[in-house]
Amino acid sequence: MNFPDIVHQFRGLCVGKDASRCVDTHAFPLFLSPWSTFSNQSRKKREKPLCVRRASCSETADFHPPTQARAGVLSTAASTGNFCNYHHHPSVFLRRNFPLFMAIPQNRAPNSDDPPVDRDPDHDRYNSDVEDSLSDASSDLVEIDAAEFPRYFLEHNDRLFHSHGINEAPYPLPVDGEEQERTNNQHELLYDWLGSHYIGPVSEVLGRRSGSYLRALDLGTGTGRWVNDMAREFQHVNFDGVDIVPICPRITPANVRFEIWNFNDSFRHHEPTYDLVHARSISMGVINYSDLIIQIAQVLRPGGLFLACEWGRGPAMAFEDHSEVYAKEQLPRSAHFFEIVNNALYRHFGVRGVARELKIILAQSGLFRNIEETRHLIPIGSWPSTPREKDIGRRLQRILTLYAHSMSVMLSNTGYYSPFDVECIVQGFIHEVNHPPPGMACAYYTVHARKA
Image 1: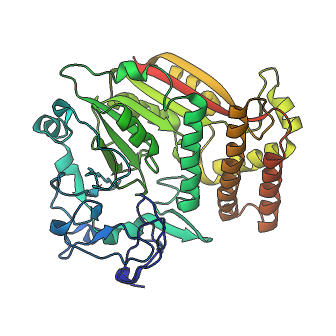
Image 2 (image 1 turned 135 degrees about the horizontal axis):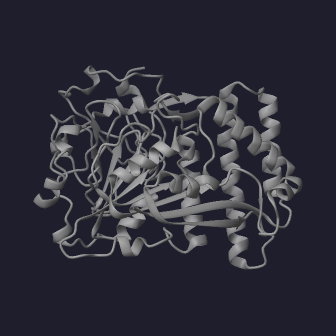
């Protein structure tokens, strides 16, 4: 199948000459693609760059040179190594040498659902002062052609995964529409539970200061929901979202940029650059969290804030006097599910759960101070007494059901268990989640610390 003929229905974006099936969304397209390797040839400038635009269910996605790009159009022309004019059209970039980068400076479509963001001209991302502070960008980043997009994805068992390989990026879950629905729902649930998109002295760290250029980095940004919401709240701060696949939104606040690179490798910046680094639910994609902490400290400015958030991968009960042993006794199917999952993640991908060790890892690094940890017990199901907690509990049931389905693909792919065993393990967990005993919960850990 040739690229111009590739058509994949993916939540609102269509690619191909005869694209016709679309579902409304703001996400990038995912493509059905066999395993592909990156080559120098694939990074050369294309003579006929392509554009992908938002299409309705009856429209056909058409192709335009970047000079014809308009609001709502994603330009995918290749660059000679310099950033394109950000004010003309959104652009996608990657690094010249692996790992890849993608930067997406944004324009706002006239009919966007989101209101325009009022910008302080003194903090405009693309004025000359900011460009000077990003002087490494022109040599590190190049714009990617539309033909590059399929290379980021690999289809397996009717689900789409990243194509980087487990030795480079161990993240085991799919990156398709179903998994994106789960992470977006999870983002909204966490906001409703916590009452904010962050915990700790974020407002203090990102507070508007005269003459200061503030930056924040989101590791494992995924669909970019956290970055976008934070950018609207802190309009004077510039946010960079990083991931290994281009599933971020096309229309965002003007102070947002998305990049593709693998944070298991060396960071793009090697000097204190950011005031805040945020890492939420990234442990399944991290080979060595202690090494990652060192790099995070390296890019944080003095006094900068690191905020880490991870789900506990094990059964929990919502009452503090209930021990882990008690939780396993009351939730045997959940305990069995997480035991199998954790074992497979370590044996096949080399990753461990770090939620309960985050505070210890930060303390042992000697690079952070004022380390504070909070353990949140979020109810599963409708057993709580208050309407708010009942609603959150029901929503978490749906999120965990999607999580179990995504994990079932991972368990099958490892080859450690038969399809029948995987089905029994997963369905047992789903049954317990949807018929929870009073007190069943998920543990969610948040840790924040200042750079020493």
